[in-house]
Length: 161
Image (tube, rainbow, N blue to C red; front, side, top):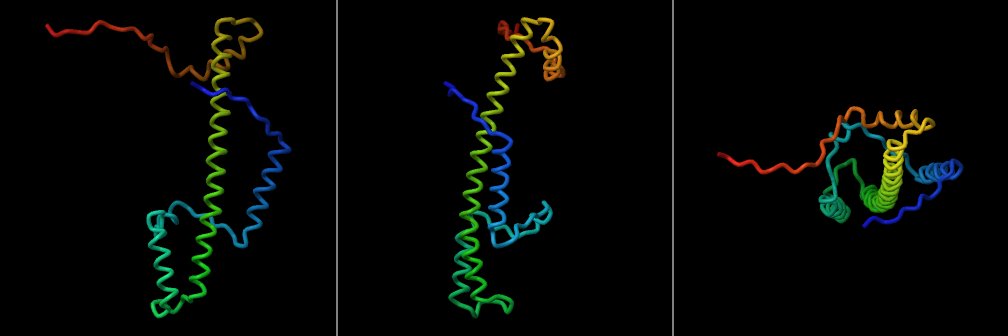
């Protein structure tokens, strides 16, 4: 059973307000965001979700035992790094959650619009009134390369003789 979908509104002015808010969020970060190429990402040491406990345990061990640190690291730096990762991970989770909900909302809106277009196309195909032929022909381009659909006919089972 499908849900009834009511299309919300989002005006150009509202979209610009959201864009301004996103820019403000980015400005409010007290550091610059990094953009990496796919090659740069491949070269990074991977510390995904399965490594989170290992990473935090390693940082805590180094903080409690500064003699394990290399000369270019300090306890203060590791404490800052630990706090940065913890807080940025929470922000990232919020942004990812928002992005997932935005993506789902967009998929629902596009699906609903596509269903409406399919219904309109089917009705226009039957009607073919002079005022809609050009629009129908333009819509028909979407299916031009698909070829004719086979009708669902049940064939008799074949037997070996």
